[in-house]
Image (cartoon, rainbow, N blue to C red; front, side):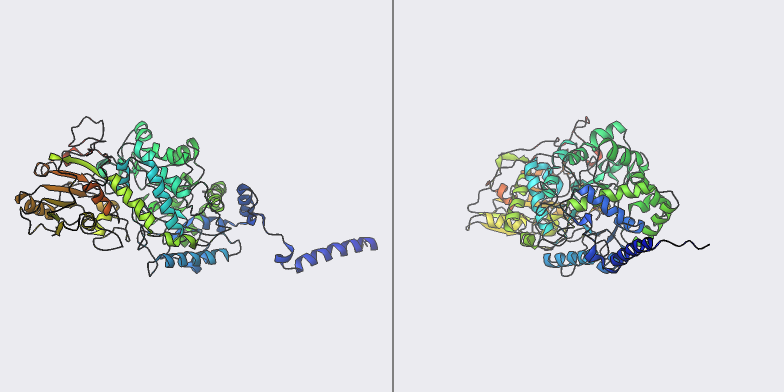
Length: 612
Ligand code: GLC
């Protein structure tokens, strides 16, 4: 039987259908109000929820994926829905100029915001002592020198200057500071540590406030990263990416406080360490990431892996579904893949669809990541702030760097008060492979990942600083190997130490002594009878006890960066030395690891430093 609707019913139905048709016919841009997540007047949490409701699983997994710029150009990144791009050490556009960086960044953002949901990318770099990938940027002293300054306020200013140079290239995320507590100087990353006890690294977490500013959406604010969580500086033998074999009590007492300090300062991200704790890879450590970092410490930012670090979990090349599952379930929110990003996304999707990675974990990771993107103001201002591009390598920033160089110098010996040197008259001899080399005095993570010798970026060498400091009538002779020295000179300045390295390439399990070139050069100087003033330019204390008696003075200059004139400021007395040792100075490599309070007798104790 046919049930006929009364006429009135049809008219109501017709009205409803017409209304639907009307809505459907009108393009969404006209009828739909802007999506709530695009409304910057709304609370961030509300915007995150609104955006996540609109995201597919593919969208969400994309936000958890970080690819290297060389593996995914702007179109590939947008097509794949990748949420983050990084430049690995030295990975720069060509030409390597601030403008080219900003143009590259903007190209990625234009592609990202043109996607249906328009979620901006977040772009990370290792600006660990200035915006060190960029040619012409100010290169500040590496952390070991900043630790020697004992000056958190200065370090915060360095963070602000670095943030301005980073922002001027568009980049919005800095994989810094390294808050490692370096316990064995044979470790290749000792120079990335502010000190061997937790106090100085915790105090120097002030750089987080410099980088992030008073609010993440403030001018030139960039997201900071506390790394590498946790215990990277405590591995047995100083083996980079090795095994930190300590009790939980020692891990908490020695290695954790700098991360607590960074969290108290609102650090927006944490990078997990390659290393292991008592045989368990940190990237698989649910207790230390989910339990301690996110639970007990209440870290609300997001957690990023290190470079291909999840590949290491099973000890085999490449990564597997199990390694993806294990790291994500342990609490990692974003994976630095950096090449096989599609494989990562496919594997993670399969793990979620199989129920082995809960959707709640995916949502938690997205909430953390998207919250920072909203807080940074990326949805409102996705492009480079070119008003800061001119700050890159600016005189003001270089003056701050020169101030840091001065404050980082530690005077360890000064027989007969040979220092400060007079500026006036006579002849001064300068020698050593590190006296006139911007690359050597800057160290690793400078223009390239490993750094390199030579005039790699604009700056002032130590020798040039000496030349600028002395009076016109004073003759300065530089000869790298010390040839030509004789007793007509009133002093000889020998700049010895290490050539650039980064990470494991800098591990020195075999010893921390001077190289043959330095020893031969020193012998030539010492034979002349001229007072020899030695500067070490190195990423750590060196094993020099045997050579020390022949020297009149010794100054640790660490890795000063581009503003080498800061060394002359102290050598000639414009500023007195104020630095103190952030690391105990061994009497011999056989003492390693040697640290404050361990009962050993060092050459110079932690905290030591002379003044004029
Ligand atoms: C490196 C380092 C880490 C850096 C990352 C990205 O291997 O361990 O400090 O932030 O990769 O370059």
